[in-house]
Length: 193
Image 1: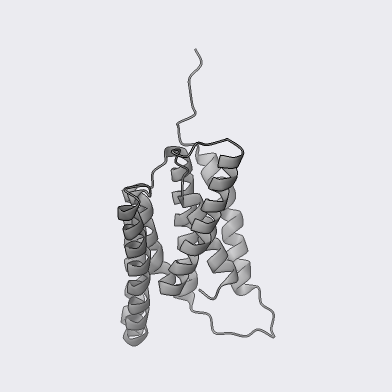
Image 2: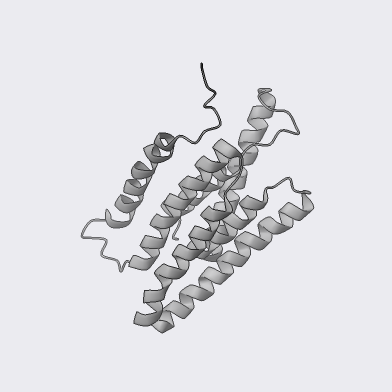
């Protein structure tokens, strides 16, 4: 008897691309030569690495299930808080600045997408709103704005192409998290976040 495995989560797909993307990010951060001696904030680098992993998971889940699990977003929030704790102990002043930046990113990601969610009458998923709020914690205000801009632009262009090729109809939904993830990667690799 043949079973339908199309809706089951395949961990091989999840794990296939993540190490490559993480390695590329680490090379980007630490790959500068001796001429580029810059002070590297290891907490920021660690947060960005976590964001790369969490974003990858969100994209895969959204493709497979058309949802971003609340558990993933809660894990993102918990990981951010747990990794911030040592910074508070070691350098409280710098931690306060990080918290301010993160709070602005959280507000930008969450409130902008919440407004779109309300205006579009749930044309945007609630998981996308929560995910982008959490993303803002990791990359701050300007990083969250850049990721949203790049991600929604890529989603819009892809949606138009799919409509023109008659692969989707006007009322069909496409998962947004993969495009938001691409926006996050563009912001991380080509921005100063």
